[in-house]
Image (tube, rainbow, N blue to C red; front, top):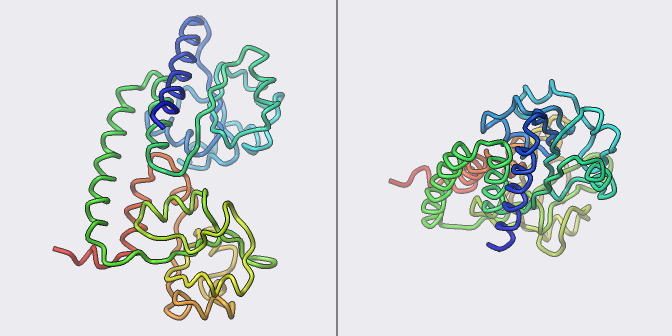
Length: 287
């Protein structure tokens, strides 16, 4: 794993060195991915942004920047129209042919691994710090994040349970889509000291009523955006199978902003701490 991060950071250093060699050309960055855009702003490097993708909704100032479309459906023409010198993206961005087209024009393209554990967040912060010339600020941010996560780990060591959490992404127009392994929801649940109630598959899949019951969920976790789209918590609980789970019987539905909860960016320690407090109320009562 350390080798993977060293390789990623090496790419960042190489990209930055190449850009510095073109000192006569101002650095213009197109950021593809909400976590990367958040990092750029958190480092104070937003003046370098020429544009962002449509998932970059935080902070609010990012919404005023030119957009290049959805991160998984980029077009070379749309990105090139902003005259970038550097595109930073995660492995979720694509298609690959578009990224190859951008490289062929001479635009630097830095693709960073996007995994759902905290070391991946650190790797992204380090790399963005390098290419924006904000390594000192990145080091400070990383140190603060490590401290926050260490404090959370210490608290969770005293937790009396590991509640089962069912994350539902979409609930309209059919069976609810639930998060399995290798998802951002799975990652944040684990960071917060919970257990993903769905571990029989990876990614997101629709759940049958039988699978909802079999989840034996202690909590249902949803995004605030899903609650708004459904018309409230009661609408989410208004499913016979969900009502029969421990979470449904107790009305334990937790809602969080989507980018905060699932972004795996600079606010991940905050998201993990807030979710942990909701899953483990006994920690707040501990001396």
